[in-house]
Amino acid sequence: MSLDNIGNVKMNIQNAYKFIVAEVSEGSDKKIIVRVGTNMMERHYEIDDALAEELIESNTPAPYKVLGGGFVQSNWWKKEIILFGESKDYGREPDRLQTVNLIQKEFPDFKVKADD
Image (cartoon, rainbow, N blue to C red; front, side, top):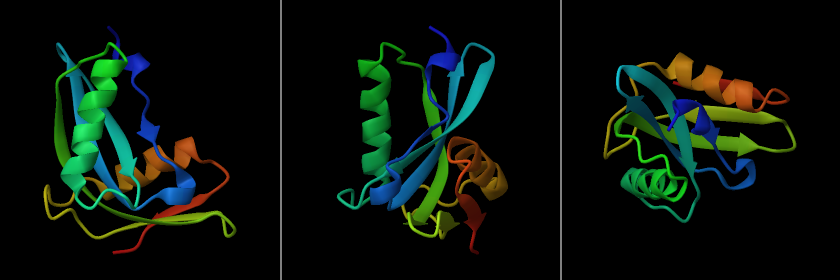
């Protein structure tokens, strides 16, 4: 198994609502990833559950730790993604700028920013 097989960001831009940031590890290697839940997910821990299932289904059951999260507002027409707030389940991730940069790499045609 390689951490390279785990995507940095998983997000449906048209149905984004909440996000978590997790640190996935394999031995001494670590990787920060972002997972964004849809508006059908009422709590951040549901995104955590989906991540666990994703890793098992992809045959990369790497251990991970949720570092925190927040909320996402996306506007397809303005090509804009805004991160704000914090998770009631996990608190705010330690480095919001890192989260912005990871999402910006995944969606280079969008302007990604933190609004808090």
